[in-house]
Length: 175
Figure (cartoon, rainbow, N blue to C red):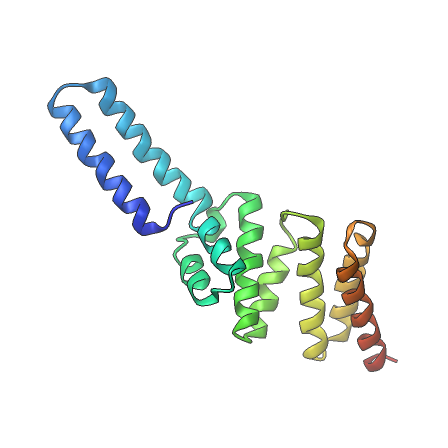
């Protein structure tokens, strides 16, 4: 929920509190300050700057969202549901930069993890299919569209329309 700068500032405050409390021999309160430092570090490892980056992404501040996503030290250490959302957001940022290869890679990884909703999962699959069609990899596109259709009863009308349009596009290119 915090940026790295905010985490560092709060961590320094707790560290100063810890040293002061140890010097005053208030060990119970010092252990509490130490616990908050550990929780702050654990939160960074398991959640990172994902919440702030998602807020920026949804406000269409893609450069800021990318910067915040790149602040995450090891994305593979994120919680399982956070990792999928990290990859989903990173794929969206790469798509905005028109870096289709990286976007495809991130969306493929995002589709392997649980996302916020079925629509997000289907969107990741559809993005991979769309990029594959644009790159001429029609077999891969058909496979990902087939995976997206498994969730069709739970997707919204807009996503169903996108899937239908991609099927039409695929029919043009595939005999």
